[in-house]
Image 1 (cartoon, rainbow, N blue to C red):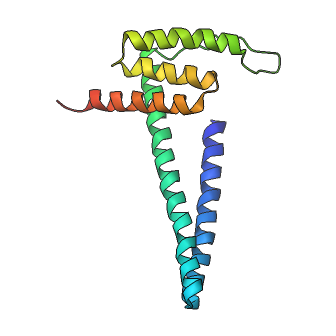
Image 2: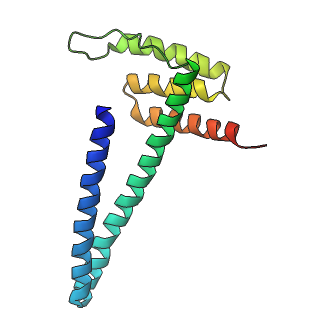
Length: 150
């Protein structure tokens, strides 16, 4: 729950920032000189990109959470079996062992969104965020294809 609160607060702060930056861009455009209009347009591009990125990221998180809820209802969420240091940090060798199993599971069932979801978690535990995100995107795509009417 704290992750959702943190995400919501961060998103709200970003929206406020986008509004402030956008208002500065509008003020620059209203100034009317060639330079200020150019800068104003450039400044307005930043919030547009930021809002788009925030929207896409929020959609990704919502879809991943939906998959997690569905997998949890099926009893298929992976159990946290990782060894940890006293500080709470995951032992790298433990993460690598779990990752190897999840990768083999996914290779055995490449069209199963559940195996891709569990692989994404294993990538995340191994601190490979880009691959974790790609694996989760694959899980979402497979889930959506499975849910779509034939």
